[in-house]
Image (tube, rainbow over all chains, first blue to last red; front, side, top):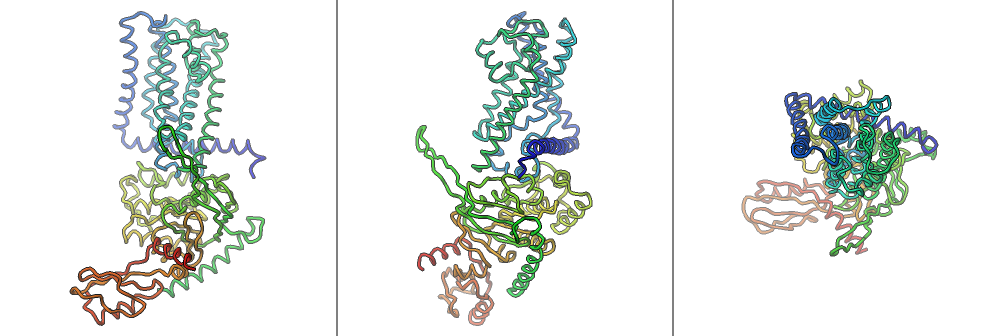
Length: 280
Length: 351
């Protein structure tokens, strides 16, 4: 019935989704703000936990001067880029992890009877500002790297910084959504999903040069995590990328992000459709 | 009591006729029923492990060629044993599940294709799981419904006040949902499903696990809702009393097929079901003598069980027993759905 106005409807649904996301996230923020002390403590805790992550890298550098040819500030730069991107994605839709449980216990049904897109509801459920701790920690490390490093700044490189961060967040969001879609098929698969999300971000904290070429190829062409930081950072720092790619590829993270999100969206729709035709 | 029910029924039919003329403008085909199922099927693929790396695929027909219609303002009970296909039907009506075959329309909308549009017009209460936000105070869930369904402010306030008053939620609004008792949560859920003035309310086992007082509160509220607002109500239940006190019409489903569709009295006739009068006597006695067609079915110490037709009044039987025997206490047990349906099957096999 609504076929002719297909794109119109889709745009309407996207707006509805964003609005619903805002409503639900806002509700969770208000409720956590009711307990300010607890909020402050958990944010600090979140910050401290991710900070320990970087301490591990510092410890490594107390023994060696370079990892795969990259110095400590350069690795910190990689760490900061992926940390902020992942932190933003985790803040926005980190709750996707819980989807498998919702499918298992049938509470997904209650989301399907509301007049807003399910993805928005799942993503906004238990929205927690305390996840900002991770973003903050990433920003600090990134700031340290930028102060210490002597980057040869050009207008293009300056522009690439925010673009890379946002595209990185987009790519991680797509991974979260795709992982969620996968949980429709395999409901206990949140561990597999974690391998790509948390595992992915850990991998990106190290220079591509320390990994086997096949893994780098996989992270560039299959699950394009390399676009989060490896490619833009290699360009910004003037380091050769292990794969022989032209320089302009460093500016393609937005394209990679859009492509990933589109694919993840399709996967999500397929997942939801399979749920609705098989039941719980 | 029976007379009261009778008169309510006639009033309802009158109302139904009135509202039906309104629906005509909505769909192109003459007098359109509000809910319309035509040969609806739902087939599940069930995979079963039969050994190492071996799986057996089997198809299960949860709903098998189901056809019925419900008019606007009707209050229909939908009953059947576990696994009969009740919840699957509700899930298809709400758009959660896509039917495998057949035609399904609610208010002229195909639920599985236009799920979100239909969502504005329906309220859903799942007895076993809540649609409320588990960790947040009850009022937060209501505020969210207000914004999410774009309910006009005045309308929201009016509906909320009404629900809070009738369902006695005053003291619960600031309590996190996870701390509510089952009965409180159920009332909270029903209110949440009604804040946006839905045309139709689906209730899946709304009284399951509730105590008698909570059950009565919920039933009273639903009865008023249907009478005053003309909201179409479809409820699934295990409890024949829900049907008896609420529904003018009952549908029985088993193995995904409609076994019976009509008034409850008719069901008792079809199933020839029996109620049980449990009497506690002063002392142990041999099986007491009771007027036909009642009979003693069980004796245990001073307690005796008397079966009598569900369509008959218990009053005469009680009087007869009390007049001749030292009666201490008594209670009446309603027939359960399983036994009614079992009788229906036996009847059919015999015929």
